[in-house]
Length: 558
Image (cartoon, rainbow, N blue to C red; front, side, top):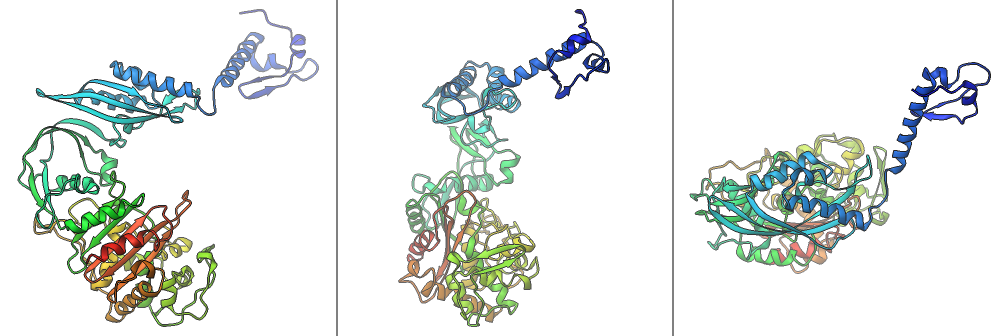
């Protein structure tokens, strides 16, 4: 140990910050830093350690990543991966454990050999790269090529640039928890047919890739096919919870497909594909109300089946269900005078109409047709927290997670809520979540008077049980509900889109505000003859202008 300094000498030094505490030496021969730390040498050592820690803290780099940092981190990761130095590649990410497992499986389980990774042009913190390799399994080999990307992040503890780890780095179709596997497929392939017997392919109908995956998962083993060898995405628990299906990425040897017939109309499906392609993030579903058959399902984005599995606030299209509730309870009548003030406060929230419009001495039918929010919110004090949930379940068959369509679906959610959230749910906000399949079913229920669970494959194929609703609306309530939707189609917010259809028709528009979006999601649900349809255009704007033309064009084909 070094020589101890005298207390007098320590008094001439500045107060030292040690371990986050300020040690101040008081005058006289009282207790100073020397006595506090038990000795001058120990104090020197702790002071030095504190100084080192402070220096290290200053050395932690923060702020945006430079181009050089992003490029260097990306290349270090890709080079180590390509050279088979997996511990080093994993260490170049911010989750070495997860990265090690998936990078190891890339070779061991997916049987991908001689892989090369070529980085592309950096865009901000993101670096795209191409992958080329060979998949070899039991003497069968096929080339593999695809594009992926990675994002570089700064580690908080020391500021080091690292690859932000997600399973999608390895392959864009992977979600966290999924794996890549090459081997005999767990399920044989299927040959899906439309209602006329024509084969359904993604070349004909780009939207149906996820539908075909779902059909294979459901019917591959019972449709009489034989499994082949393939590279596929095997979904993890979280992905399965989201009802995502396993996905074939590369077929090494063909299996023998079984045959599954669907209810899809080739003419309607082709038209639906054409319609959604006109807008970004558009989805639509067409049903036959008299049977529940799905005639068309299409999405402009092909990676996820929003039309069947989306979980979005439906906005004012939810007012169809709410109106049936209010009419049943005697809180509204189609031709009865109904309040539509500019605003209404409930549960501490102040609810507004679009542009704060109001309808003085107007009917409930007028409020429905113009989509007056406060006409519905004003009835919240007279409703129980579970009333809307029960109405959705008992009459419209929603929010019970028991539909058996033939492929994975989200069956709507109308949770029991209270105060402001309960009021918001009356106009399709709050915790209410739907997709076009759900809202097309709502329109179909109004048209037919009975909930018939939508289906894509006849239950006769596998003898599955379809969902049912426990009750129907009274004749009087149903008549008024149809009157509301008919008036909206003829004179309300849906009139422009539905022009030329009728008189046997009805519609409801909707706009759902979403955090972070400049424009709301535009919704439209309608029926005409023995067709019912619903669509959504995300971040599109008002439903009558966005989803309306898509839905109406398909109804015109009826």
